[in-house]
View (spheres, rainbow, N blue to C red):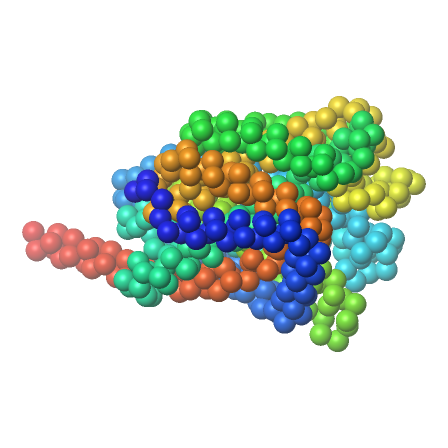
Length: 506
């Protein structure tokens, strides 16, 4: 099981080829990736919106349907982790750097620079800004993760299949999943994972550099970000060597601890009542307008449609590109829970935590902007530190934030090396350290190359491009799961009827 498969060598070759292309011809790489991203955004924007909304509806249906009682495992299996550790692990893997990076930047930008619909700088723009931020980090994002995680956990722990994306499609394609078609599907999933995680590592490096700029005056430069990536790579590889039950578990709990301290500090020293009132108001606004927001593409307004492409479609692509990595990881730590328990936990708890976080830092940023600090003019990676600068204990908060980014950085990369190792060793739950090392270096290399070829823009281009092919695989996974669940439920009903008949006979 621990022997590397052809998926490892094929995907590694593709990764190295992409890296060389970016290093040797950065302008060509940036131009072509930009053109592909533009094409996908124009022609597939509607597809992303519709697909993710269908995933949300599918998850809600599974919660309320009779399938919800089915356990992700054998009847006697118990969860491996407590609720607190489980939530910490899935949250750290699933959001992490994105929340810290965009916590202040997105709400302030939507309020003053890039409003979704309202006039910039108005009270209505604040409501729009916060509702949109909830939308991008709410149940839609977690439904994407939940679909992949649910399918993988079901087939792995209930039916004993390898923890591979291809193995989940056997109810549809049978033995073909053990041949070239199955290998192709696994290669797509692995490459999407590499690009998705590399993008996040790039954002993390850029934001740590932004913190250095604000605190120490170290300017934003590529070599600084390269050093940050190199240092963090060493740290997450050390964590990866300790295994899932130690390194990732302890780091995930540490993440939640640091995040909790930073959150409470900002809630107390920030505009507390404004934050709490905004949270309740935005939650109601979000729920009320969720159906309309989910499918809004604005075909008759070019400016609004472009905004949707730049923001909503980008976020949906980001979550889809992360789905194989986060999905496999969440599946790995969710054995023993029922489908209803699993989906309720994955959809609701992280979404609410994200809402609280984004409200606290977003409203604090908006208040600072209203008070005269021009947060909107700062680069996204410096926005959070610009907000801290307007409140007491700015240096302490900034150091805490950089520590949190680093631990999220390490946890995400650590989790990804485990998942990539698992996917390229035929689903081994304990992949060899050499394989994890190879993937650790590969994802850091891709992050460095993407930053070199075009910074954050290149990261976004690569993300949207990598997400598209995997989105088609996700559709097949949903159909495969539903088919298998129907057969599973049929067999359970037959067993129940036989048991009832035996009782009456006796």
